[in-house]
Length: 477
Picture (cartoon, rainbow, N blue to C red):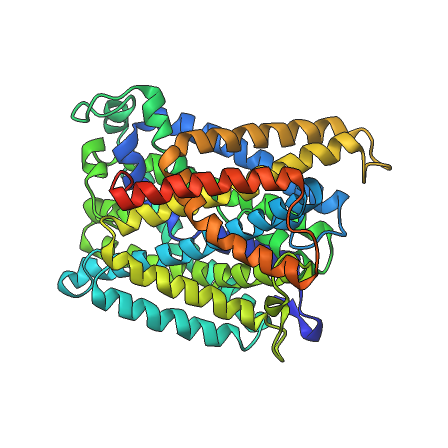
């Protein structure tokens, strides 16, 4: 936790930030999303691809923290260092926006979890009552965080420990219930599932794997609070390895307990439904409590990260200086206010969404891809330049390989997402550029270079196409 008045975070607290950010809503939905898409064979391939790609990205975050210790809040700052002001802004805005959308998803999941026990009140998480409860929760967290980062990170550490317990219990109970015959029947896809090629099966799992890996950069975002700079990279790898093992187990074990069609048909959060089928109703209650604790903990971590990204971008003059203001507890108050206003508006909008649950999950995943791609790109540039490698020149080749694989993986994720989500992200990026123009005007600086103007023109065109698709019904949320 943070140390005293200086609010420095230890290795354990930084690791808890990574684990707390990654183990949120996504892991509790893995059985159902994978069951609807593929059997164990496709799931193993999907995790091999996702695990390799995200491990390489984790290694990029690690070596960037070591080679460029002067760069704080690395997710967007690395993009700016490598590709200029406007790309740095798009990375910061995209990461912040994706974090906001992820926070909306958390509240939808809370509503749908309560809807399991009170269906007439909470429904699928987007009913009027669910929205009102979500808004109350958003602003309760808001005022708690305003009291100080130290208190919030301490609570996050405690919650991170508490929410791992039901997940471990789920894994252990399904190990005891594991049936190799059932697993074998499901292995290449259940016999009662629609025919689908292996490539299609793997592709359909890709966005959920991106979502559950979000938060891998949690230590990097909070690097300015680290007691030791080397702890940032260590916390990233420790959090990644531990959480990946849990996610693979949670995905594969249900195939040994239920037919794939049964897994695909369960109500979300699917981990609760699977355990209910194995041990009875108490299993659903147990996991549902874990969901609520986990999601509230993850929401706390992501609220901190959202505000920190806006604050750091404002400090580096990539966002209006309004968001660089801190209150007496050193909390970026204005950044937190904007974040929670936007989250509240998105929560209200779920009332009109046909499938708020999966739409918010997929939008969060796609919005995070641009910042990740730019981080990997900067890793390539840094390793090629040799900056920071004066004492370790032998590491340059290795780090280039890490960064290239991470970049190729992220591009593959864009392709797997499909054009719909890319266009919808562009719809949000276009009005967001107003903040960039505001910041540049404050500093009396040139708005765009010639290359940045081309990037903005492409973004604007994609945004217009996406807006047209929404208005005509070609694209539906």
